[in-house]
Image 1 (cartoon, one colour):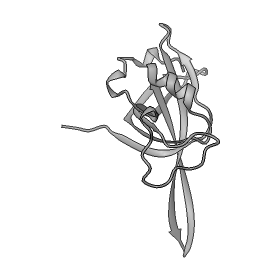
Image 2 (cartoon, rainbow, N blue to C red):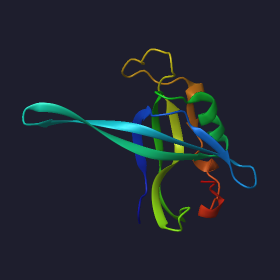
Image 3 (tube, one colour):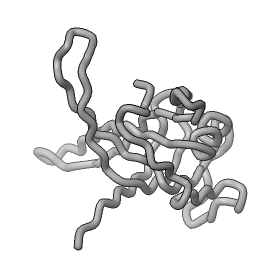
Length: 141
């Protein structure tokens, strides 16, 4: 048995980019930052890690409608590594999180939610069963 599950809580670094596969299915790509505070030589230091996320179908549309730079989100997904050839013909690899569940924890311009505040029903998007069977060739980037 094996498990491929990623859980992230972070903020978007930019607005999501929405593209479409050749057969018209929406794909949203966005990056979120997660922070870790460490103590080094009695000084606190914040380390930031950036994550590339990909959402498909209706979840991609929701990302395009409701997410923007700075939005705080909780994301569950799975780790995927794709191989592709760049414009110079070099083989490249990219590791992404394919989003299965998304919760919007705040929206741009709104105050931060209080700790323990549960998101409203319309802010919780559980589309774990809606991830389409898409091959690497279908992704438009």
